[in-house]
Length: 102
Image (cartoon, one colour):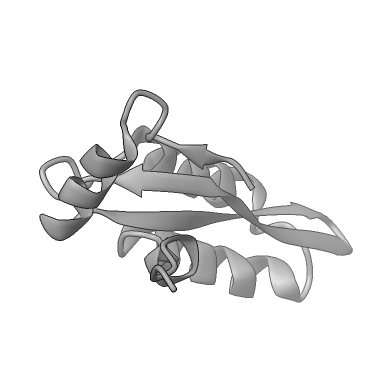
């Protein structure tokens, strides 16, 4: 999975941001086609403490809001779950991305 937001940062800068409260998050999106509903994770986003809101959070929520409802029965259920996850900040995967040095 691709990590977005660390392209111009060194490892030390990422560690410094993590110590200030940054985290790695995944957003969800839901797309329905009447009888088929897909719920998928986004790429991983690096979210700093001073800029917790990302455009991706809004984009994936908007995609789910528009295209997620239409599948029966999972469309409405997974759309609400995706919106809840995204609007509450995404799923924190920092522990899986940053493994302690052995």
